[in-house]
Image 1 (tube, rainbow, N blue to C red):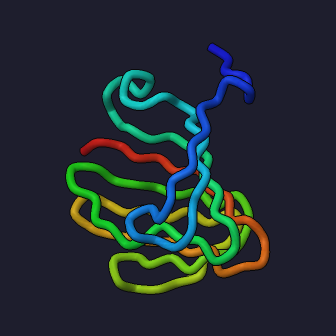
Image 2: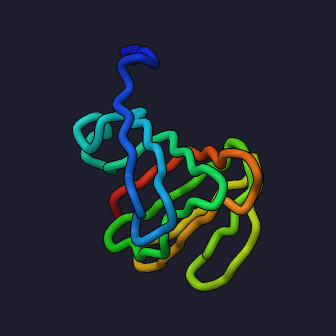
Image 3: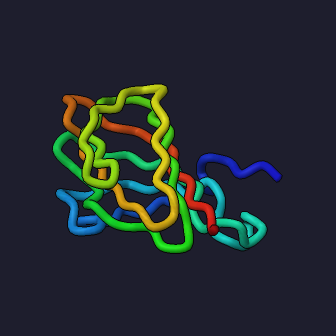
Length: 116
């Protein structure tokens, strides 16, 4: 299968998990059916400067971010750290996270949510 860029589903989420502003999500795979029911998200996500995904906890799933570009303040289960292009974050089942673009350019990341 090849999915061309023009075929990718793109949607905008306002105040994701009570975060600031909006995020743009490009679904690289279309949910559990394309992930052999092992996960629900494989997406290219963009946050403009000042926008964020609010803190939330993952139950029965994990989430990984691979930072493609930009700088972000990452809340790792209550511990704050700065992440940059090339960094990977992992939030296991039962723990929480949030992320905010604290730079001057768009923050781009790949998000992967897998079921436990």
